[in-house]
Image (cartoon, rainbow, N blue to C red):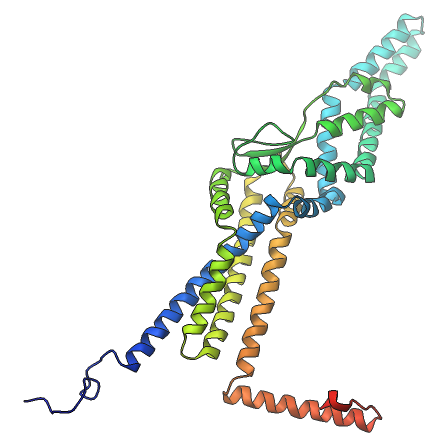
Length: 365
């Protein structure tokens, strides 16, 4: 059959590069851009958080400063400091030597035997005294100040540790373990014990005790991911925002695209929050209790990601507000009914206020 003259391709039912085809491509492009932007949103948040923690010393110090006042961290550090002190002090041996010396000076055998029986309780008393002094130091404001100062000075060393380039500073990385040097704190305990009248503490030599911050089998992978995120940290947030903005602008229905974008970003923040919770469990399972107590490891992790969690919650709330606002200002029956009910409710509230003698003037209107 011959084609009818005067009919276009679209009129004959053949898809062509007309308005319908262009609208379809606009929709597809908008969906792709919005989906990619939503996928990049949590990565951008993590990259920005990591970059701020690394490049901003004040932000890093604000993050770790509360750890000095946390009971779990104080307990873990006090345990390690006490262990270090007694690794150089044989309290039981010192007690036995004292009793033997008194016996050699003419102490009656009966009294010497009685003193020998008190050697154990005496050693326990000395250990209790030392632990009390350590606890006082760890719970003091001086320790909190020293903790902040040590972390401020060690910030650059921590950067090198996260990048896998430990330089032997206050924070070092060896294999899968990141540690903080406790040598200065041991010296403080030593000085406090000597001042308190415990002269044998002067025998403690200068040591480089370590407090394990992380001991994770996948630290190497985390370092590689950190390098990538640090490289993209400046660009990922901008790229994500631009993609989302272009997606909304290209879409045929801008309002509907804005609602979808906001809901997508909110969902991405929920996924990021769940990922942090899952990684928290993985991290706590990977840290041996002999290296760092479970509660101390949990506090350490929660403190380090506090700003990241705050940021994702802020974006989540903002996205939901935008989605709700875009939907309620639309022409749908639900949005129209909601606006009418809200307007009527405000009118009744204003009327009741005016009857009670309150005058809102043009603000009420």
